[in-house]
Length: 168
Length: 452
Image 1 (cartoon, rainbow over the protein chains, first blue to last red):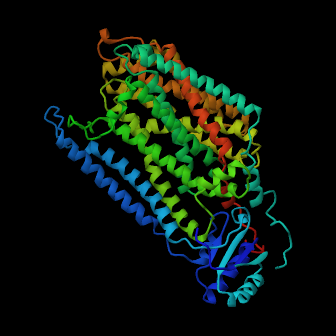
Image 2 (cartoon, rainbow over the protein chains, first blue to last red; image 1 turned 135 degrees about the horizontal axis):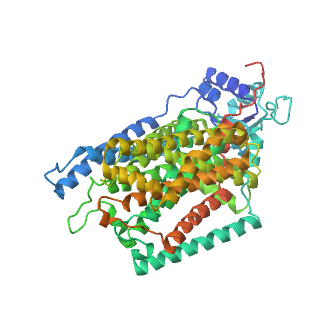
Image 3 (cartoon, rainbow over the protein chains, first blue to last red; image 1 turned 90 degrees about the horizontal axis):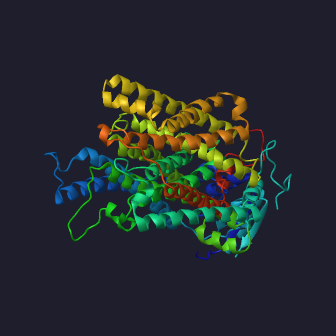
């Protein structure tokens, strides 16, 4: 991971404290801060206010690719090697629905995972970290230049952070 | 430093705190005791016996499996259907109940999901064992070849290849995606060589707002894809039978009947696995009686659907007015496989009726014993459906009694060993209860408590 440019790292043990910190940071125009939560936290996510993740577009594209691939593959292969049974239709779409369906799910799921990895990598930011953030503390890292540090530090402390430290 | 009232975040009465969850679940990992190694040694011995039986069969041919015309599908196909069925409840609990936002699933879904993956891995072995010449298994896959051949996509057996391999891929992916944040939590908690393992498998997860944002959506869509998948897989498996014209197989009810049976046997297997695991790992605080109660209710519901399907099968045989169909149904209950049919009727339809009583649902030993009976009954159900139908088709000269050989039974035992080997390895190395999802349903501590 890239080394971060320095900033303030705070640990919180209360949800409402971190939410008030996020709101006042947003109000003051700070961007690019990172919030760590041990589990998905809807109140915190709402305060940050991200747009809906792009992953769903990946799922849709994967699923559509799967269904197209499923029908094209089965139809082409049965035309390329026709198994003639009693004058029945050679590329018969009804049984191929099963194959197309399974490939829809398969490609959709794999595309979702690919989308998850891609989006996480693209939106990754260099930030200081503390192992407690996967345990029971909410973390907040605000990258800022040296001259703004004391202001940010004060803001985080007054919001009720348990611990605030400068990360150079 | 800000002033705080407590050094540790306080939680509501009796609820574990976030730190308790990490600590208790991370404590299930670590160096196993003597009991674990004894169990593992036993499992590996049985697996070795199964492999030897398989080698005998490969050397001398499928005759070793007791196959004789017309019964060319026996214990292997039975076990294939059985293991695919076991897998189903895992996806039900992890995906379908996730979409329904049912909170009780969080404590049990990881075990169920791991069970799914290992059960599909076990199931996948059987078609290969059954084809005899194992080294030609790739003929099932459409691949470009010099003879210009393609597989027959109109065959349900081919649908099965696609359904089961998709099921394996998707359920393994789903399991791993859900595991990553948990691995990160134990990574930050343990020391020693395991820390290295978790650092690699945790994929650098830190729980940032961006990570959760994409993770939440991805998990939701994986669940949404897994839900129709789980219903399709056992439907496709049932069509292996229902698309043929064998009396006793050629029935429109087969797909829902098999799906219900699959979930039924799977929930029973979840109970079978959870009871000893909860005891060994001291997870009574997380896997509580209410979880078993809910699992028991699921068992009761699906068990009733299965019982209903049995009755509908008899009705259909009678109502069809078809002499062959009626003879097949009669043979199934009272013919030379009567013992199997009545094991299945009693284990799957009668015994689960005890689950109507709350006392039984809340008694762990009673549930454990019942779950074993249901496992037995559901294996027997597949055996009876497959074998008794093939043994009694249209023409009397083409009727034959099939008896499984020692090779069949040893390979079946080996398959259980293979399944439990993976499960034991998983249970000691990865969290069997989801740390993140258990935390998610515990409200994060707030300074102001007034908010209701």
